[in-house]
Image (cartoon, rainbow, N blue to C red):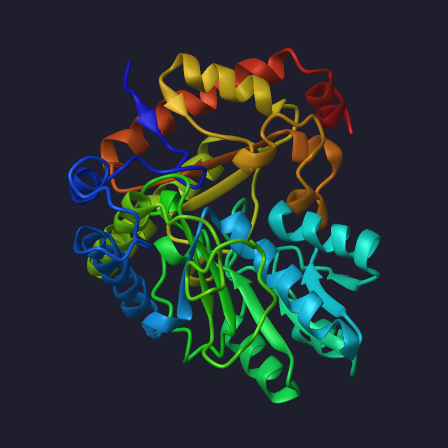
Length: 392
């Protein structure tokens, strides 16, 4: 039996070189960056180096990068900070029905407690917004558009450049959650007219508990975390120096490997997709195809299958996968993303996400293609839903 990890969209293993870069800041270089003595200057310098590494990867300025505890915190900062600063203009926010819950739940919170008006745009069958829907939703009260760069469940990439250009022309701020996309795609915040962007280190072989927020120079938001004067007075809390160092190293390594890793993963992804669709009757691929899909993402639905049971069967064969977002994997509710693209409850409950990474090999893809079809066939033999489907 092989051990095959195919849940890189949930989290990635720490890169050994990233851990090596972090280690001194747990032990030898432990000074508080806010202290004024020379020993603390080493910690401050490490943070600024990491800030420059993240900025360089995005074609941003170092002063436009703020470190957070997570992508979720960055999402919250974008929505809450913008609403609180610009609510007098009208407080209207536009997002989509397939966003990560860090955006969706924040939007709902602002509706309930702040009186925000939030528009949740629909998506097409591949999970992509329609520009005409966005253009029709913007009003003179709109202060923010928040559309994720690429979906964490189905991998569909949004027309971010087109969205950004439109928002800039209309004088509306544009935020994108790039937690998944930043590890897989080459992103230029200037070229794409992005005003705010959320990142997370643990999706790109860095440490958990560290994220970053890109805020275009000149824009002013209300602070999300209040207290001390860290991060230029924008984000209070003693900095997680080791985590920040790890994020800087991870982003730099990710950027350097992108030109080789993206085509390699795309080839493996397409072979997995084609193999599953060929070997398993009535298998459905969820999301877009080709260049409009993240290179490491596959998401399938199998009618007559319960996703959680499928995960247990795969785990017994040494294959780690998921049914969707790791943040909701314990929920009995069907994926809001799959429902938004038009799947039935039965189809959504029978979903499987296999997300590839640096460790994924041809041999592992072969192993999955050997193991998955008989597992699905066996479970369908016991499924009344499958029987009804065949009778229909």
